[in-house]
Amino acid sequence: MQSELRSPLVRQTVREMEAYAPPEDPQRLARVLGVPVEQIVKLDANENPYGCSPRVAEALGQCGGYHLYPDPDQEEARHLVAAYAGVEPAQVMLGNGSDELIDLLMRALLDPGDELLDFSPSFAMYAFNAQHYAARVVEVPRDEAFDIDPELAFRVASLRTRLALVAAPNNPTGNPVRPEVLERLLEGGWIVAVDEAYAEFCGTSFAPLVRERENLVALRTFSKWAGLAGLRVGYAILPQGLAAHLWKLKPPFNVNVAALAAAKATLGDLDYLRANIARIVAERDRLIAALAGVPYLRPYPSEGNFVLCRVVGRDAFQLRQALVQRGILIRHYRHPRLRDCIRISVGRPQDTEALLAALSSW
Ligand SMILES: Cc1ncc(COP(=O)(O)O)c(C=O)c1O
Image (cartoon, rainbow, N blue to C red):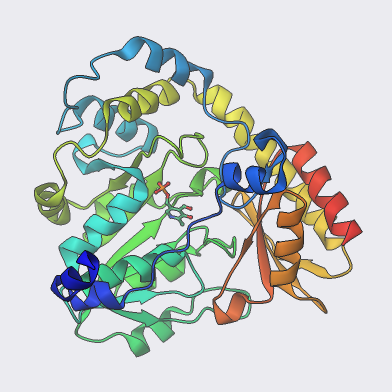
C-alpha cells in the first residue's frame, strides 16, 4: 500500500526501468540442489578461480582503523596504482569497483537526452546504467567478428553524443580493440572510455595514451586479475580536464579501508598474481580447444578470462539450464545477437573437466 502511494514520486525514468539481472547466487543454487556450495562450479562472472593474493588476508588482519573514514584523496593508493599502471598519480581515481567509475562518468557527462555510444553486444552495464540519467543509448552494432567499425559510430553520432564506452577486450565477445580503431574514435571529440577490466589477460593497455589525449579515459579493476571482486576496487585514469569534475562528484569515502588495504597488498605481490594470470590464460586456450571439440559448440577466440560460444542445432538457454541443474553456472544472454550463445568463465583445470563432462552428457 505504502509503495503504491509513494511510487508516483519516483522519477519516471526509474519507474520505467527494468532491474539489472545479476549472476545467480551460488549459495542459493547449492541450497536448491541440496549440495555443499563447494560443489558449485561458478563460471558465470569472470571471477578469478585462484582468489586473491594471500597477502590480502594478512593485510586485513593487521590493518585496523576500521572505525575511521578512509582517506578521501586516496593518496597512497593513487601513488601505488599509478606506478603499477605507468601513469601519474594525479590521473588516478579509485572507485567502488569500476562499476562506480562508469556511473561517475555518466553522471558527469550525460544530461537527459544526451547520447552514449554502445558498441553492442558489449558489457550490459553500460546501457543499463545510462538509464539512470535518461540518456539515449545509441547502439553501434559490431561486425560478424564483433569488431568495431568506427565509421559506423560517426554515422550514428550526433551533436548530443557525449560518451563512447569501449571494452578492450570486449565482454562477452573476448576480442581486443585495434589501436587504429581507438584513434579514429578519439577524433569524434566525445569522451572515449576504454574499459580495460580484462587488460591483464591480454597484456595490452591504452592507459599510457591518456596523457596525450584529452578525451580518453581508461577504466581498470582489481576484480578480475587480482581476485578482489568481493572487495570492490577499480580505478579510472583520467585526462586533466575531466579529473577535476569527477573529483567533485566522487562520494568522499567511496573506497573503504579494507579495499584500500587489499589493493595495496595486491600491488606488493605481483609475481604471485602474474603466475595465476598465466595459469588462467593457459587454461583459457585449453578450454577453447576442448570446446571446439564439442559437436554443438563454436567457441570464439578470446583475450579475456572467458569464452563466448555459439550453440548450434540446440537451444543455448536450455543448455544453460541443464548445466545449472548439474551445479555449473555459466551466462546466457537476452541480447538478440547472443541468444544462441553462452559465455563460460575460465576456471581451474578441474572446473573445465566438470564442464566438459556435463557438456558431453547433455
Ligand atoms: C567490461 C567490464 N567492465 C567493468 C566490469 C565491472 O567490474 P568491477 O567489478 O570493477 O565493478 C566488468 C565486470 O564484469 C566488466 O566485464
